[in-house]
Length: 113
Image: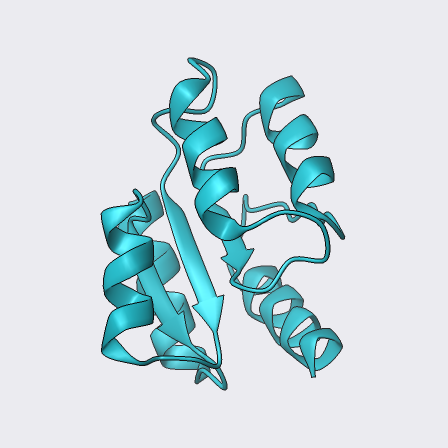
């Protein structure tokens, strides 16, 4: 479930010192949070309750405060068309769910340095 994935992400991030995690339940809430206090990395679920991921990506890229933030999409749908669509829309990476901890950590490390 999405809650299980969130718990996994929280556990993984606790292992990395200096990383904080903020969550948003909707795309609009995430956009507002990112604009008011830009994070270093955004992990974005493909299925949002209010707006599409491509719309979130479009707005992030169009906003100067958030344009340079890497966005990694998380989804259970790892079909080639889906992955290509989000990467074309501006995502920096894609993680298929269920993802393993090593994969998640290496993705976070790659984008945060």
